[in-house]
Image: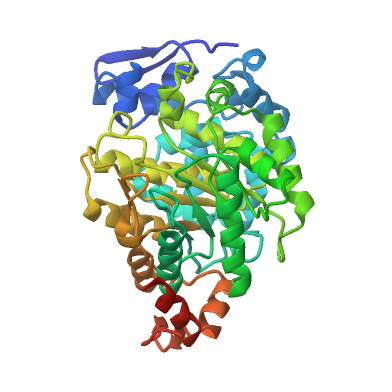
Length: 466
């Protein structure tokens, strides 16, 4: 069902928005993807009018006005059919603006937000984010605590994990091993040791998974591995007996987007069931790893006229349904056609983190940009710091910030050390204990510090790679 028109007057001019879909799009902070799609506000005044009109919309309106038709989209059906009315009850009477005020109040503490999460739809989260400044997004996300576990525990207060990303342009085992060792020696890898394979076939997936498993077992590392291949490849690898820890998949916020990725909800359910059957977790059973990013629906022409941030939030409903260990918004990877510059990338990263956390997801962020975007590493330093303040569950760790296989710029092992040190954050507790046991880190009056020499246990590995 489509909404009736919305109106708001700014000064002497009255702006009209034909439906809730258009209102959401016009209220979105400026970004190049929405301009490309033709759904953005035509001026700053129109954007303000839309934000003010959106603030007056009751939250219940999002349960009656589906932005993507229920009959046409399995993601919409998932959102509405699994909505928890009991969890929603405490805020059911609020408008979007009232909801913003409540979220910023002391009444919305961590316990209240955790209880509320199953009652919030992605569209509600996206709507309230559009009425928030960056500091509001940070404040509320900081209060949201989402804890998951597999071989270690991710998301505890005062912790920030990292994905060790040892990609190599030819999947060379020695090159991957060198990057892994480098990352481990800087305390990276507690979220996951995850490889984007250069050659995406099942035999290569099995080889890489087996190699990662061997390293984890040899050094008794309390972490998990993942090869970021298509979910059907991972299913075949499991069938062949490969030691799969986590199942990865890129997902989107509409059925058509997911179809463009070659998947549907039933396939994700099958993959999760297969991973659970292996029983490889030691402290938890969160076995899924999802990646998302603003602009994926538009690039697949599968956005149904929605703004890209609302589409992104809808992807989080898909993720939430499968109880993941990790969800990662690859915020600047898709290019300046969708997020033009550092200001847009920063805003998108904070929005994504906020919406995911509000919906109860273990959100991380690939703080990144492509070389043709109007951004640089100083901009990424700013976003990394803001996300650290906001309680982001994990970030990426890559040698020198430069992924030599995917050809984009992200955060390095040193960047993770920086944000942990400046904000007093620590690795996952099980991984931290391992780092100290292996003499990689040691306790210092000012917090954890790197050891002063190469631990003996790794010396032989370094000699063999030299």
